[in-house]
Every structure is written in structure tokens, then in C-alpha cells.
Image (cartoon, rainbow, N blue to C red; front, side, top):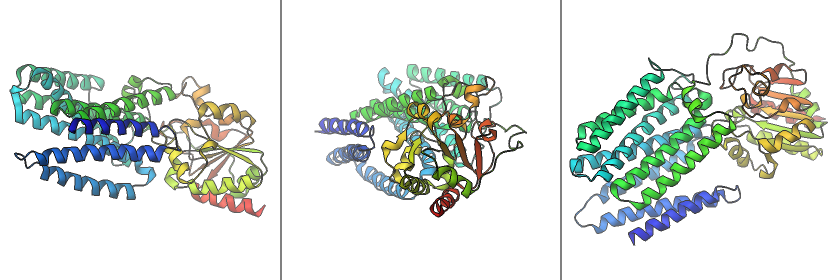
Amino acid sequence: MTELSYLAAGVLFILGLKGLTSPASAKKGNRLAALGMLLAVIVVVVDLVLDDSSMAWFVVIGGVVVGTVAGGLLALRVQMTDMPQLVAAFNGFGGGASALVAAASIVAVGAAAPTETAITTALSLTIGTITLTGSFVAFGKLQGILPGRPIAPPGGTATNAILAGVGTVAAVIAVITGDAIYYWVAAAMWGIVGVTGVFPIGGADMPVVISLLNSLSGIAAAMAGFVISNHGLIVGGALVGAAGLILTIEMSVAMNRSIANILFSGFGGGPAAEDIGTKPVKRATADDAAIALAYADTVMIVPGYGLAVAQAQHAVRDLAAALEARDVKVHYAIHPVAGRMPGHMNVLLAEADIDYELLLDLDHANPQLPHTDVVLIVGANDVVNPSARTDPTSPIYGMPILNVDEAKTVIVVKRSLSPGFAGIDNPLFYEEGTMMYFADAKAALEDTLTAVERL
């Protein structure tokens, strides 16, 4: 019954992932996956309770209670703008849990472990440790506790290579000899690599790093499953590992960069050029924006992280509804890496009950932009920077972007001319057809709506 229950939990995980492929079934999919995890936890508790020789079920139930309370509070209180940080923290805790399982096995079994168990123990310990430390560095960068710019360790990538080499050799010796000290050396080395490896990565690449760390947390969990012979943990970890890796690859493709370039180039979040924000721009007011939008036939709204920070999703929905009441066709263009997490903008707009059919991805939005009267950009920057298309010297050259500069008029809602995560200027802001509306996104949209209603 235990194994059949784990099989059922695995099926629920898979059905949950399948449900997440469509907004219509996403809530159901999330509930199915949560139900699968609940079933897996119940099986562990029941299994321990039936084992009269063990009192460990007290500890497990205590963990369930603490985890349930913490998860519930986080779900209720964490804003969507902080969701990337929360995901990073979850990755770190997941990797840490797997490392602790491996550590407990080392203490309990030591040299008596068979070779295959020793290998999975070493993998769970080292991958879990690098996930733990790397994830919390990513959390610190996103939360603003740590600098978002790339900070390379002394010696750069060579230092990381040496640390990783020492950690790998120590892990191999541990597997061969069964000496616990080498396990701890391997864990320490890879834990340091987690810190020194993520610090040199800039804020612009944090979404990809979080996705990769998510994959590593799943792999560590699967290895921990092999260590303790838990089929539910193996299946769940494998699903997380595979899904995270696929997402990492898709995001790197969307940025037209290799994963190696993202991890080792130090791109993003660098110091801004001195001349950023010094060129003249065409400033707009709420009335200017209202006139351009209200008398357009077609409007494309491009949401970015600035919309998320201002919690302006409801304001943008209200403005779009007012325009639609005037027979203006409104769509939304969503870049794959807009915001700080894949799907960030989609979730924000769904929270405001915006019809998912109106959300266009890169491939569907770009063909429509040359025929669009007005593009309204709310807090986006790098994903609409034409330098990616026109300037071979730009660090983002070759990255697929939304070609908003091909529209007749562009209105950019932004607090200032400050650069995006890539730390570079955006020539779109200075073009003849661009109007810069400097204000908080929510306030700007609300004022524009009021102006539209007066027309």
C-alpha cells in the first residue's frame, strides 16, 4: 500500500503539471499537485506510526505542522512582486533538506553503505548544498539585501573551478573510502561554490538562475530519494529537476544566450553609463496619453516589472476597459522574460481578470506592432530596447525583443530614465514617436483613465 500510495502521489504530480499548461486548468492542476504532496506526507507519517520501534513520527508531524503554518502565512502575505524571492527561498530550503537527508545517512551508515548508495548520498549532499547557498544569494540579490551587480570572487572563474574540483575529488574519495570527513569537505567546497558562483551573476539573469537552482533542488531531492529508498521522493524530485531544466533552456533561448554565457559572463546589473538620462526626451502628461489612446484604433499594452512593483494590474485593466468602451482594440504583449520570473506578467494580469486570449506572446505580438496605433509600455525596459536588434556592440544584441518602435506612437510609463537590469541605455526613449510619462505606474494609469473619461 505504501508503494501504491507513492505511485498515486506521482500521478497527481504529473496531472498537476499538465494542468499548469493552461490558465483554465491551472488552479485545478495546482490543487492536484498539492494533494499529491499531502498524500506523500501522510504515507510517511502512517508508515512511521505503524513501525512500533520508531518514535520519529512525532518529529515528522511537528515538521508538517510548522511547514503548514509557514506555507499558509507566506501564501497569504507575500506579494506577487516578491514571488521570485520566495521561489528562490523555496529552492534553497529544498536543497538544504536534501543535504540534511544525505548527512543523516552518512552519520547513521558511514562506510557500511553500498557503492550505489554512497554515490547518491554524495550527489544529494553536494547538489543540495550548492542549491542551498546559491539560492539564498539569489534571494539576497532580488530582495535588495545584496548588490544586484555582478561581483566576481578573487581569481574569477578559476577560483570556482578550483573549489568545484576539490569538492568533486573529495566526494569521489568519500564514495571509495566511506570516510565521512571527505563528505563534509565536499559539502563545504560546493557550498562555497554556490556563493561564489551566484555572486558574479547580475540581476538581469536572476530569473534564469532561479530556474536552474529549482532544477538542482529537484535533482538533489531525487538523489535523496535513492538514499532512503523513497519512490515518492524520487518521482517528485525527477519531475522538478526536468521541469526546471526545460524552463531554464527555454529562457536562455528567449534571451538568445547560452546557459554558460548566463552563468559565467557577469552580464546584467552593471554600473550605468554616465550619459544615461542626459538626452532630451518628449515628455507626456495624463492628458497627452489619454488623447493618444482614446482616439486610436488599436492599442498594445506592454507590462513590465514596474507594473508589478506599483501593483498596477487593476489600473491597467480599468484603463483598457474604458478604451474598449470607445471601440479601441486592446491587446497585451508579453515578453518571455518580462518581470523577474517566467509567467510573472501573465499571473499579474490574470489576477486582474484580464482575458487570457488578449495576451500575446512575442511571436504573435511582433507581427501586429507595425499596424498598431499606440503602444503603452508600463514599466518595461530591456525587453523593448531596440539595441538588441540594431547595435552589435550592445550586451543584449541578438536577444529577441518586442519591436515596439515599429508602432506609430509609443508611450512609456516610467519613474525615470534609469536603465533596466541590463544596465544600459534605451534609445527607444529618445525617438521622435516616443512620449515619456514619468510617474508611478498605478498613479499614471489612474490619471490617464480620468482624462479619458473627460474626453
